[in-house]
Length: 168
Image (tube, rainbow, N blue to C red; front, side, top):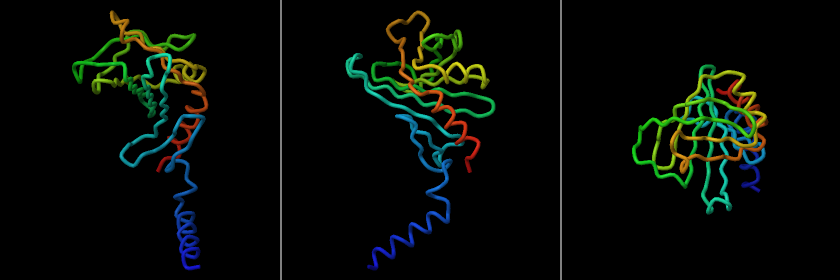
């Protein structure tokens, strides 16, 4: 009986503090995307990970984040083996049917991860929201060029925007 009372009081305390009801401070799922505002980050993130059996079982992770000024795309791919952290790579970015950016700059974060920072604009967000595939085509490096599945990207970006507008 004491445990039930304690659990009820804790639950009521979480509700009154807004810890369970605030979408900006909690994790939200949109399909297999996770939308969250982590305490160590200034902005909300939308992330998705999957393993592609057609690509030797390699794992992919994509993380999207934005502010009023920038859109950040981080990609982790088990098939990469970048040599130099901090190296700047150039790649064309596109979706299944549209170009997003030509000769975009990507920074190597570690041996399997890169990060691109783009100027935020509604046109790019619109193209990404209608896509189900994101392609990164590195100049003079077909071996490291990849396509990343981004199903339900529009819903994930809408949830990311809501999280960003309501973060604490």
